[in-house]
Length: 89
Image (cartoon, rainbow, N blue to C red):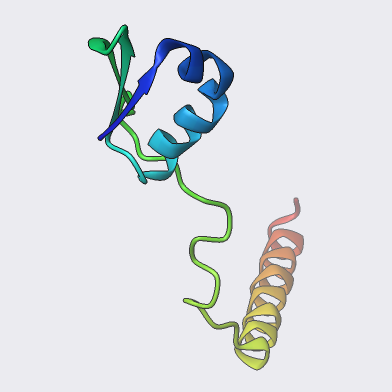
């Protein structure tokens, strides 16, 4: 917990909020004439925010397997067209 006076809080509000967001501080107390008057805490979201790239390196991509699937999909597509032609569509 950090305690700051009113003047310091006004001058460094962005820094104080960032320290709460980053988790360095759990609360910041603002005092006037040495007496605590305000307690700032972080408002918890219901859904945690995901950072971009949070899954980087956790998955692999098998290009050959993907290409094989592409051929399978093309074969299914061709078969579907042949069936439609036989049915007269």
